[in-house]
Image 1: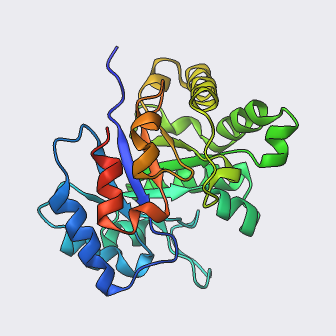
Image 2 (image 1 turned 135 degrees about the vertical axis):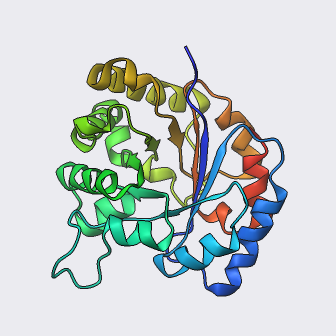
Length: 247
């Protein structure tokens, strides 16, 4: 069985102005013989200029969210079609910051996944538990439930990935043990196989949550870890390259 192609994606969140494109260029210039596909997901204002800055490189440009509808009276929102036209190839959906801060449900995330496919974008669908849920022993049930609720059937045969991000490890410096990461990634893979049959073996399962150069090699070589969704460490080329080249 062929292993999924790894993906390492940087989520810049609400960070980055035009001067930050130099960090993206430096990332593209510094990638060695990594087995992974590499993507940077900047704020929407930088998608088009970043696509231009990275022209000719192997680094893909992604977006951080999309609206379920293709157009309409949705002030401040952007459709998948708009993001694709601006130069995005991928899109992060269901990030814990969207789920917690904007009340996004599994059903809404699934609708956004449908929209991403409609617009020609590759979805990176995020799942993860809070610290209270883990302490209560509910982590596996919460995350596999998010997987079932957030991934529509039309993903079968398409390019996409799941990103496991324990909410309690995002931006805190805390990281699950390798055993905890492997347990969760194996549970996610089993759920994907239940949902999609043989197609459930194809999407990489990324890990996200305080990934940095110092712990990247251990995390990226854990069982069923098919890459990483990197937050703050992706803003500086030196740090991001330390993660990319650890694979």
